[in-house]
Length: 81
Image 1 (cartoon, rainbow, N blue to C red):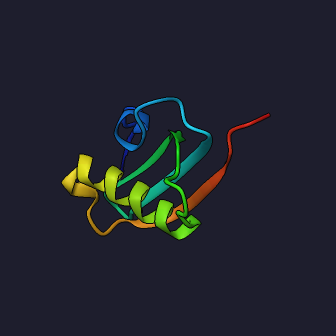
Image 2 (image 1 turned 90 degrees about the horizontal axis):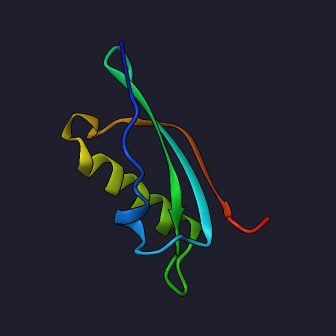
């Protein structure tokens, strides 16, 4: 099994440092597991599900081998300490 560490999707999800932090782990059993993290700024009115789909779609578009990967973990919280 191969573990990939992809570059940050912050640049693809938002143009500036975002106000939300995300972590997404994807798994294709027997093939690969990746964990992607970054920040994003959800558009006004966006739901957690909207952002989940946007982040999942962005990460899987980077690597077609991840298409259909199962989500092992998803975290989206305010980036403010």
